[in-house]
Every structure is written in structure tokens, then in C-alpha cells.
Length: 327
Image (cartoon, rainbow, N blue to C red; front, side, top):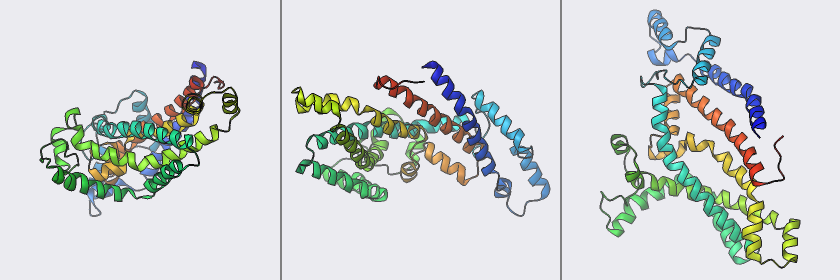
């Protein structure tokens, strides 16, 4: 297994280097100095700004310098916009993203698998059709609709009906961005700032996940081992919730591991709507301000997580299914 992991890491080194090079080249198509100084800037000020940003050096030199920082995990380069180390910016942004994405992934996965098992258990019945209709309906509604309805019912209608005061943590909708920045996101105020985004994320993704997992369960129902278990007199609940669930873990692991890199990078749409200072909003801010150090560091981190996730997926295949051999 360790030899396999080592080989996969070596195979992905050129891919990783190519991703970073492509991003650096794409960012430098338009000169960011003009965006910072304006069109009326003097040649002297433009040259001074390019030297300060390190853009006066050849691209290959900038590429080598950045790779050296990535290898040594040195993200001390200062942001052009915020004038702070890039590592500090990303370190502060990753925790708000995890506060939303991790609970949402756990809740949506467990709920979707449970609903899919029940739907496959009563396949073809009214219960199955009702669950699938609800799943399709849930995935057909736009995210913006969920955000508007969630903010209205969560921030105004429900607290007024229940008589919840403004200062109570049960008044969970985010009413402003400034309090999160001022006091920081902590476990004791998670309910106030993150519950509504988590609920919306779960409702939005559970429809897709349920339909996928149900298709997996229905396909497993036609396998030979299911027919053998039925012939041996095993009960339907044992077949569904023990034998079939265990053998359906490979597509479930694949589906979960695909979303794993986005736990770190966060949800750009949700963080933008709810003004949460996570990785998604940090990236959007850096792109709008042409903050190359932040964008490059974000890309390097995301690409590394994505590659490691793919390798981890193969390892989990071998651990879950003895038929899979890493070679």
C-alpha cells in the first residue's frame, strides 16, 4: 500500500506543477499594476510597483520562488491588498468554512443514505414514489429561493411567532456581517451564525444525494449475493441494512470523497450570500482585487487537497472491499 501511495504521489507531481504554472500564467495575462495605480500612473510609479510586487522578474523566476515556498510550506508572502501574510489570511478563513461544510456534509450524507435505503426497501410503493418526488422537488428549487425563504422565516417570521428575543442564540439567521468579524466565530455562537447556512446546504444537496444513493441501492438489489441471501432465508431488513449497505460503500465513498476538497475551500455561494469570512469569500475578494499571492496560495492548497483526496479514495476502496487490490 505504501509503495502504491508513493507511486501515485510521484505521478501527480507533474500535474500539480502544471496546475500552478497554468494559474500563474493566466493571472499575468492582464497587468495588475494598472488596476492598482490607474491608467494615469507615471512610468516611474509603475516600475516601482512592479518591483514591489515582484513582477519585474521573469516568470520562471517567480514560478521557482513560489514552488520553493509551497515545498517548505512557507506562506509568509504578504497579500497585496490586505498587507498581511497569506498564511494568516488562509488560516483565519478556513475555520469559518469548516464550520459550515463539515456539519452539512455529515448531516446530508447520513440523511440521504437513510432515505435511499428506505426508498429501496419499499421500492415501487407509494412511500418510494413520495420520497423520490420530494427529492426531485428539493433539488429543483434554486439556491436563491432557499436563501430568501430561510432568511425570512428564520430571521423574522419564526422568532416573532415563538417570541424569541433578538439576543437569543435560537435566532439563528445571520442578520449582519460585522458581528462575525468583531467577535469571531466560536463554538458558543455557531448556532447563531451557521445553523441557517447548514440547513440550507443540507436541503439543497440532499435531493441529489438521495437519488444517487437510491440508484446504487436498487442496482445492488439485483446482485447475485442478494439472490443467494434471499434463497438462504435472510430477512429483508438484514439484506438491505447489513449486506447491501456494506457492498454499496464504494460508490458512496466515491461520492463523499469528491466533495471532500470543498470542505476546506468552502462554499463560495453560501459564504457570499451570508457574508461569512470563509475561504470562498476570501478567494472572491482576492480575485476582484487581483491579489495574486492569495489566489496562488489558494490554488496550491486546493490542488494538493484534491490530489491527496483521490489517493485516499483508492486506499479506502481497498480497506472497504477486499476484492480491490492496490497495485
